[in-house]
Length: 195
Image (tube, rainbow, N blue to C red; front, side, top):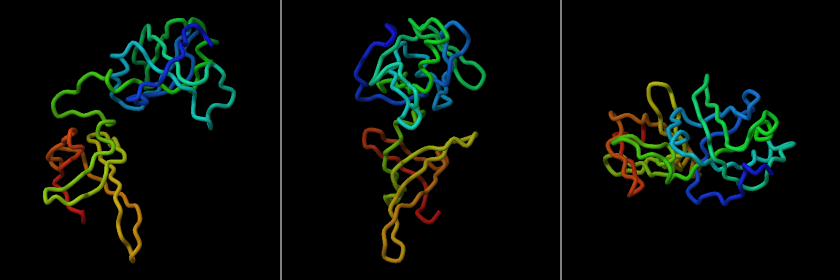
């Protein structure tokens, strides 16, 4: 393992933010594919936690095992992603060895969002109820549709006497979202079960 890769425990509040796609240039830079269009947290943190690729993508990966922490020397936007220079990774071979690594940050390191703005990770798992107090589901995912985001809710429906998982989509816009209460882990929406 390179001296730049320091073994570490993954923080309990770690959030996967992206992955290393490949080497970029000959001086040890790597191309990063962020998981979100909002890359502010990656730019705000000088230390990233890296983990090997998932098992199905890890064929031939041998740079390290477990979790390591690295220090980001430089980070900049490039084309449809980011490029980064990690301290101690000084040549293309060392950068290529990191291909596929998952990049995580502790949630506590994220910059505070502006009033009325939320990180997607903070919305996942929240219960959604309508104005009448009916439970609409639990936020399982969000979809970016360009002009707005859409909450993907999972709920249980009964069909022919059998329960099964179902999905409901609600635009995450002020016209439909009345309140996001992170402390109570609840979103109140102007939405009906039969929409």
